[in-house]
Amino acid sequence: MSEMILDVPILTRVEGEGGLTVRLKDGKIESVQLRIYEPPRLFESLLRGRPLENVPDITARICGICPVAYQMSSVHALEAALGIQVSHEIHELRRLLYCGEWIESHALHIHLLHAPDFFGCASGIELAERFPTEVKRGLELKKYGNELLEVLAGRAIHPINVAVGGFYRLPDRDKLREMIPKLEWGLQASVDTTKWVAGLDFPKLSNTYECVALSNPDEYAMSVGTITSTGGVSCSPAEYSLNFCERQVPHSTALQAVRIPQETSYLVGPIARLNLNRDQLSPISKQLADEVSFPAPCTNPYQAIVARGIELTYAFEEALRIIKNYERRGPARIEYSPSNSWGAAATEAPRGLLYHRYEIDDAGKIQAADIVPPTSQNQGQIEADLRSDLLREMAAGNQDRSALELQCERLVRSYDPCISCATHFLPVRWEES
Image (tube, rainbow, N blue to C red):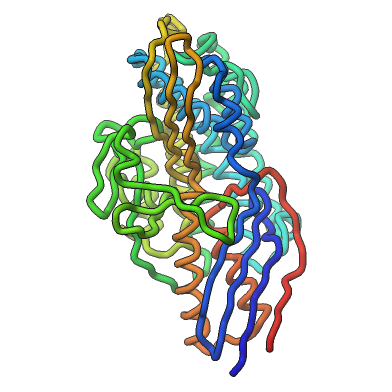
């Protein structure tokens, strides 16, 4: 009888700190644990007693890569509580803001975090030595996403122009239009990037998923829509808790979301969005998905890098459409009067569905807050995918420790988990008895 423990103390090339432990006994997998060392979700407690207008700027601090997602989910939830319906102009500008975030986040993950795995590179720097043109192009794409955020919201990290009811100030039309040549370059560059990553050699893994994402018959859903799933869910964000629930698991400080009542894992993120909403893609991105033969549905988590490329293209195409049609009619935001109420909303962060729920009192103070980030929702599915991928590798006769270690890390990175705000590396430790 032999037991082998695969221990990855800290994963590298992910946003934050997390570890991985796999226990094998007599050639069989006993357990797979994705250990997340996030601090407790203190933001929910920090928000209690705060004026509701402070919430977007506070929640933006949850993540430096996707602050817009936290701002958008929070303002939409608070507007639901206040009964606010924003204008079409505000809706479009918020989509534009989201385009900027999708661009910078997807470009970062594709080129510096995920692509190195396919070429045996330990870092984005090593990848840049072998593929300088592609990595330089990726950095330029990210730069233009950041610039779009700066023009629209004041700065790229933790934007300061998002307000409950709209924006503090509408962007200048001419400044937005100055972005058009850069975005047109980015549109073509994102097409080239997607074709590049679509030609990578993907591990032969196919899993059955319940995909969950916002859906909207009028647009590729970013911030407004119905929560839908390939398992039959179709609910408003207010009904989220009737279909999904977070559970505490002993090996992680992060809560792990499951479908209820069946207590099963599910998938959020680019693959889930494309599996549910491919028909809502814009013309160029939709044609691109067909040209690179992106499967419908996609069942291989390693192909998330291609899904991000398609969404990267979509974000540039959508940003150009919005800017070219923008006329700045105003007003910047809608006035409101607080009342004792509650509201919920979900938007699509780059990494997947992000849910917020708030209760407010007559003075406009937050009484309760609930935030469910994408990584908490994907954690169970990551563990399930790790199990099936290791079984596939071992069935193929792969018993090489370093190869199995790398394979585990590669799969986790394909999800682009946002664990905390730092990236570290430690060697992998194996134990055998």
